[in-house]
Image 1 (cartoon, one colour):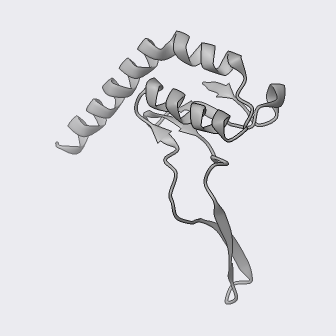
Image 2: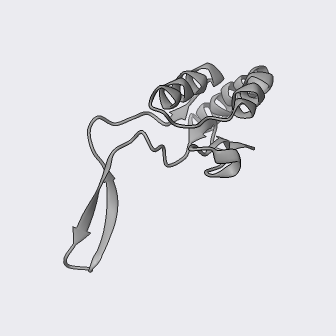
Length: 109
């Protein structure tokens, strides 16, 4: 489920509940990156540079705290995004815990 998409309502973030068991601030714009060019393949890629900014969270509160950092940096976070995250907090946090516990159990067998 997507809580915010780049540009939708002016949003500067893309936030969603990832099917792999975390809330994701996808392509977080707080993270500085530099373009690395590979001369052998004539291709390049973006590489994160220090400090590395966490963008995957195991609780809704951690995501809300992260979004507060975006706001302090001047990024637009729609109030609907905050409201919907708070409204879904209990359900999302429970699902994240259950999902990650089931993944742990399956890796131990």
